[in-house]
Image (cartoon, rainbow, N blue to C red; front, side):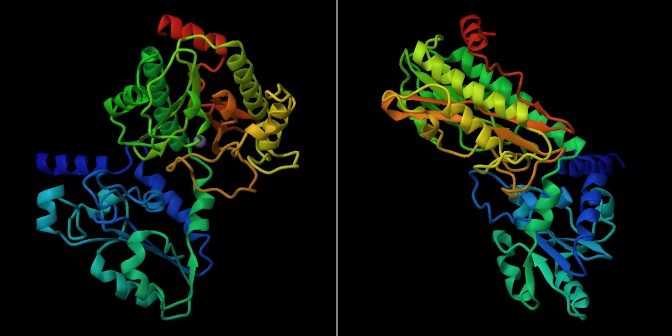
Length: 418
Ligand SMILES: [Mn+2]
C-alpha cells in the first residue's frame, strides 16, 4: 500500500503542481463545446522531439494546457461526447534512461490522469476511425512536431487548425494560473535583486545572468522563460542581445531582460540600471521618459483596450508612443518616438509570448507585459522597463511591482543592497 501511495504521489507531482486535476477537465469540457461536431486530436511531445539531453523533456504547451500530462508520447482525442487520453506502451529500454512511465494498463491510470478513459496508443486509430464513420472535420495542430507521424491518418478528413480553439481559452487565466504566474514572477523579482546587489564596473554581463538564473534554479524552477538578455552600454540598444559576454564599465547602463519558467508558467521582466549605481543626467532623462510612457500605458490598461495598433484610441502602444514622442529630444533636436522600435507588449502564460490575437481586446484575467523602450545607438543608451500585469475588471495589477522602477528607489537599492 505504501508503495502504491508513493507511486501515486510521484505521478501526481508529474502533473502541474498547483493546478488541480479537475481544472484540466474543465478546460477540456469548455473546448469540446467549441468543436461544432468535429473531432479534436492533439499529440503530446515525445522524448525524441525535444531531443537532446541538453534541455530534458518538456510537454507541448497546448497539450499541457488541456491535460496537465507531462509524460512523453501521449495523445488526446476528443469530440462533443467523449475524451480519451492515449498513453504509450511500457518501454523497458527507455525506462532505464528516463524512469518508469504510467501506461493505460495501470489500475491507477484514471485516478492519476483525471481521464475516465485512458487507452493504449495502439487504440488511437480504431477509436478515430469509429468517430469518422460520419463525415466530420478533424481539428489538429500540424505545427507541433510530434504530429508528424500521425499526419497520414489525420489527413483522411478535412483538417482544421486546432490552435485558435485552444488559444481562445488560454488567453483568460484562471485563479490558479494567476497564482502560478505570480509565483514565477516573485522568484524572478528576487533574481533581478540578486543581480542588482552584484552589479559593479569590471564584471561581465554573464555574471549578472548567472546571479539571476542561480536564484530561480535554486527555487526549483525548471527553465529560463527565454534566453537571458543582459546588455551593457551599446549592447542595451540590441533588443534581443543574449551573448552576455561584455565587461561592464562605470558610467554605463545595463539592461536586464530576464525571467524564469516555473512549473510551466513564465514571466517577463526588464529593468535598466546604472552600472556604478548613479544615473547620469542624460541617462536619467531618457529613463524617466520610458518610465512615464510605461506608467501612462499601465494607467490606461483595462478590459476593452488593445495592446498594439497605431492611430487607435484603444491602443496602449499608441499611448506609450505618444508619451515618448512628446517628451525629450535626440542630439539633433528631434522627437524620440522613432527610437521606440518594438511592440509595447504581449500576453504571458505557459509561453513567455503566449498565443494571442493582436487585435483582440483585453479582458479580465488576461496577463500581459507593458514594455516601452528607447534605444539611441549613437548615444550608447538603451532603456527598457518591462512588467508583467494582470488585467482586472476595472484596470490592471502589476504582478512584478515588487521590483523598483523609480530611479531614486533603484539608486537607493544599489547603494544599500536592498
Ligand atoms: Mn517581453
